[in-house]
Length: 326
Image (tube, helix red, strand yellow):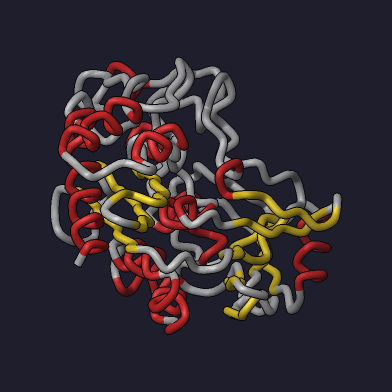
């Protein structure tokens, strides 16, 4: 690991002051430390934000504010989250291990880098690590890679679970930085690679996530389905986050987000429009999958994700609509 200096911020202001000098923030370190060990990330200066007062969950009008340093474990265990936004708790508990959830944080989770093996292998071409070098995954072992939102530059997926649930819940990311305060809807926080795979999100230089805000609870049926190779401590092959309500036998409202299908947490409002106002049926669910996957493209090893996503969507919708009727 390359030599670096480490400071400890005791407030948001002191953290931002450190960022202005070129320091990089470190939260739980569950991703950044791994990258530093491999010298994929080589910061000269780090500033820990563990003592910066960003570790609270608080009511925010009709919604909830979750501090950037709230651990995944504490967020999933919070009674308000479990009762009113259960989708978030379910998604968090489906991810990583208890040890990692005790350390990983809300802000850090949103900013984690891809788990693409070619990104982690510094002997391989990777535009996300070395812009302009190419994407070895396109013709390599790409079983876990994206089928939506890809480009010639990159086909890596965003790996997390928490952000998929937050996307379905219409969460907003609050930041502070040189340009002041910003409120960034999660649906525009992550960046698809396009021609520039290096930047994963829209954060600017010196900008720090301070919290994530959940809007008012919907009261709907909330489910998180994660399809993976083993039951625990494995990244998703496909995940589905759903918040749904039924009225008079029809789908009155639904919000859907998908993980491990796209280069970013994926939400397509056209899929929700197909479902809203309709009576649940296998034919309707198949039509929704067609809309979701109309632009999907496999790269050989991950072709199976396309039919798998259709089945996962149908299973999740079937379970939710049955529960809403009961």
